[in-house]
Length: 228
Image 1 (cartoon, one colour):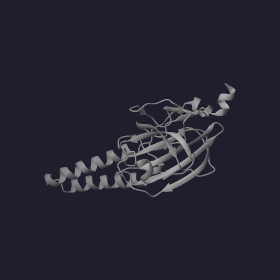
Image 2 (tube, one colour):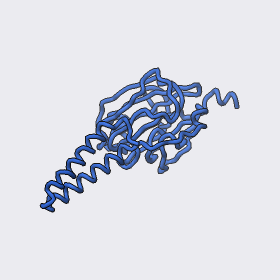
Image 3 (cartoon, one colour):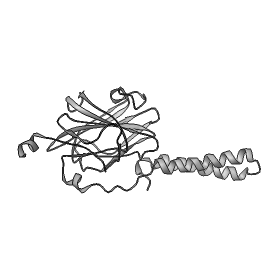
């Protein structure tokens, strides 16, 4: 399945790939032209299908029914877990979990937990290497504040050197469900999730995570403490 968030780019890459292959066959008597055109066309078609794929995900029912649970919003690898002040939405000390996406990862993004979108901002920043710590605050990004009865979190789509476009279809006031698709980052990037410092982090640096499947944290709210 091809994601709706990248269908325009997908069709352009497929069209160029097919054109390259067809042109190559018209010039097949010249191997020095035919072979490169054929290879380029096949590679473009393969990359289009691979990068814009949108595989089915069986979202854990536990996450849908339990608003404490925070799922990974992106495929990739955990590269940082640090405590830092979040100045935009939480406006307090938080734990930031960073997921780095390579061009080979699925780039469709998913909502990390149940709740209502309470905050949004788009920052037209830089395009530093996504793995650098300063990319979290300086790179071009979208910021989403999400709230439910157990707490609030912030998650960010962040571009890198290769990523040139962020796509999203959620807005302030939307009620969302854990694992729900909401957009994508095109051609390599990172996703940050800022959670309250009281949260129980379920992953460690180096872990590979899957959007809408992997549990990355649990909110430990005052409400839950009182019930305990």
